[in-house]
Image (tube, rainbow, N blue to C red; front, side, top):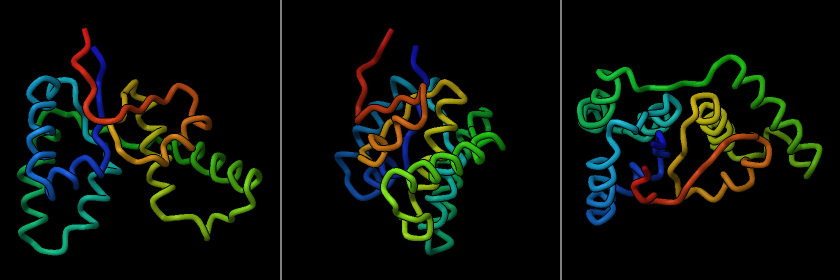
Length: 150
């Protein structure tokens, strides 16, 4: 059975769109025991919470379930080193310096490496992961919603 991490955009889409919320619910009905939370995704979601009520909703409605089950994964020290190497490689390839790249790229690279380190598949709609994948050997990502697998 595959194990999953859901990217920030999956949660944001579910918050904004009732149909996507239902799709997330159906996915979790089948895959909750095999779904993990990225600490980087937690940080991104909390950074977007502008009210105390939004923070509480994230903490109580999403994060708590993963924390109680010890299913939160975060980047290792090696992940940060690999991230730096990847950013340097990208600069050598395209000449775009780190300071001019979108801030989300660092987080995306850290999510990808964390998934690889933990044998997890990222579910995302973010096209940036197609560019990251060649630099993170063994990283896998899928578009929503993967079919239930044996």
